[in-house]
Length: 143
Image (cartoon, rainbow, N blue to C red; front, side, top):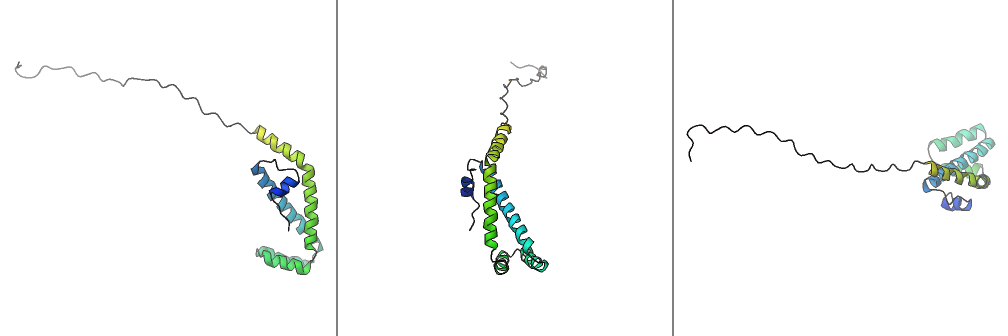
């Protein structure tokens, strides 16, 4: 059974990639392998076989698809292994460029914007309303 995981990246010299890049690359490797194996198998299938296999694929019946492959193409696992080995070799040869691109991307990423320096607070006394002029009390003053 093939494992497309962090151990694979370690094996091909890409363990130093940032985690987000690792996940993206692992997904790409899986999809590329799936496409290449599919193309090789499709080249060997008749039109009827292609239609039959496509029905499993469209129904998302992985178990049925694998059972169909085993009965119609007993060597399909060999094809998967061959394509996997080719892909590993290609990626390992490109590892220095992949690492350099990832490092350049990190270096080119804009640094987080510094938070603005706090502005000095200016104290403004509250606006004072002038007091209304005092009026003498109405009526006689009592002392």
